[in-house]
Image (cartoon, rainbow, N blue to C red):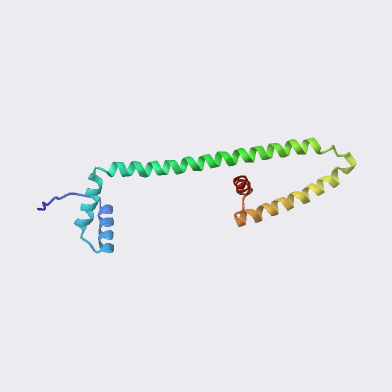
Length: 135
């Protein structure tokens, strides 16, 4: 047995119901009935909670990877700076200009290589992870 229920909905929502009914070739009543049934079903809250839990788990894994990658980047930079400061002798004043020119040349090469790697989607941190995983 079916009973009639009259209700008022925002025009935008009625438009969306009409669009779905036209696309699926079903009545508007059928669309509303399925939506209300889904909302009132006892497992609706459980389904929402499970979906939210999956999303939170995925976000937690992504944050953990970001933290790991940042630690790797920080450690890499710190080791490089320590190494560079340890092995690089001071430059005599008369060699400063030539050293600065060579430094600019090397930096330009570095930036060019970085740009190419970024365009190709190649990341050093991924290479490190791949090497660590293969050990």
